[in-house]
Length: 405
Ligand SMILES: Cc1cc2nc3c(=O)[nH]c(=O)nc-3n(C[C@H](O)[C@H](O)[C@H](O)COP(=O)(O)O)c2cc1C
Image (tube, rainbow, N blue to C red; front, side, top):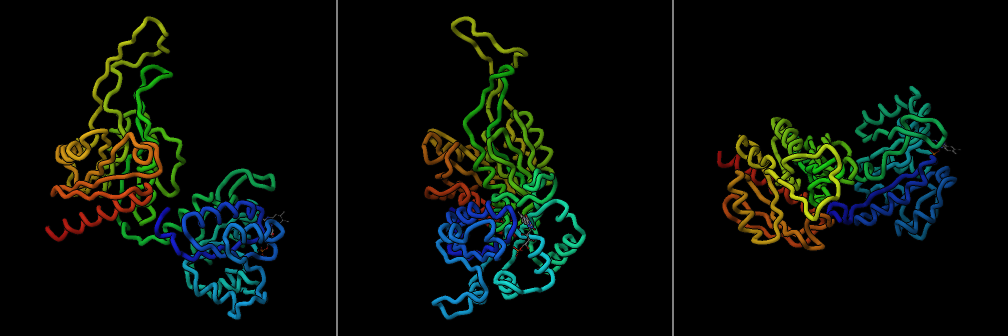
């Protein structure tokens, strides 16, 4: 759970579009992250989804009527506007977009939208011909010109049977957008290169040497860096995670491929964070055909893979270089040696082999080791939280460097 969602007041405006059926999941996830979600629905939205569902999931009364009388004597749309930290309109219909673009306030949602001062995110969702209509496009342009954040709809098959742009952006992308707006943009101007996941070193066409890295730690760092305003490139080995929105993702399989991608991308990076669990060895030879199950033993000759971190350390220049050390024993001393040997600014040491920390878990228990020998031990926390603390420390190292130079 990320701290920056905790106690944040998010007003969710739901309009009468077919994608309204996806909104309970958005509410559920935001509440799970610690946000207080208050829903305002248009009258037409209630044709698609019941206020009761959103009331139950948000734990807050749902506003559906501008003239609703409640026990609370305050004017509801104004009191909601006062408290809001963020406003999300999802799905945003062509109708409500049009009303917003022209300052029309004829229901609870559009009246609230004229009063609120918090950032507004609009998530358009409609038939592709409606979306491409010049009037709708002009209205969206107008909203952008007023500083409203308009997300691009996803492209694909639509509920009306047509295909094209008009699908509600994914729940993940909407949450990502909210996160990035809640975050302070302290990495603007930085170009961050992150590596993630395992590599696979083929033995034959169906077998490989690898490790159980899920890629979660590296993906969390990439996402957090982008949310804080950085331009991010993620070089990832094979994982089951989907590409995070707004990030250039380069997919690789082997350590050799990761080496090539990282060395070329690092030219442009100001910060490099290597969270990938690169295989240290690969088979000397890859068999062209599947090795048959013959004999009692199979001897596999392995060779060392290229040391990406070491190569990066050699051509470090002004870059900040962060590495990870995953160890089962002598964690701190092994990590300290790696920090010096690879010319890193910071190494994140994590003990693997525990259920709540390391390769596949959603949480991590890490110790930071700095060049001056200082250790910082963090308690068990989500990988998202660890990611943000790593980025905080990177900025501190940068700031100290500026003071010294
Ligand atoms: C079955 C059905 C599905 C609809 N889906 C959408 C949609 O996805 N996007 C949209 O902009 N309008 C859609 N509409 C049209 C809107 O419901 C209509 O324009 C309405 O006035 C929107 O009202 P509101 O913006 O106040 O919620 C749909 C209408 C029907 C009958």
